[in-house]
Amino acid sequence: MANESGGKKCTFMIIGIIVIIGGFFGGFMQFFWMDDLDISMILFYVLVIPIVSFLIGAGIIVYGMKDSMQASRLGLFGSRSTRTESKERTYIHEPPSICKDCGASLSGESIEWVGPLSVKCPYCGATHATEKREV
Image (tube, rainbow, N blue to C red):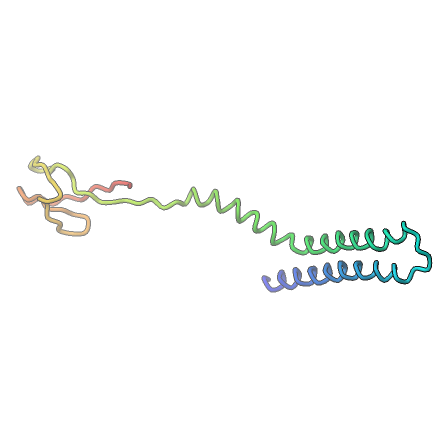
């Protein structure tokens, strides 16, 4: 499906470029093939036809790219709201400040880690789970 979308975009882009170049050179060729040199006809062939062909060709190119422009617009605005909702939270695990069994004050230097999320009281030997805190 992605290849079909890319081929479609490429086709519209080629057609748009052909229209732009064809209108540009076609207007100038009409100018050179004119028999009378009326200023209004000169301006028409040299300015109006190339400008109109540019607008038509650019419209064809933009029409072919509309799906990708909508997707990028949705991606830009959609990701902003999703990014704030799915922001990862960071947590740390700290040992409790007081032993629940003996009431002794626990500090980072006096405790012994017995697992990744458990500590051992140096006074009574009770083990306690760490407290999860958001950073």
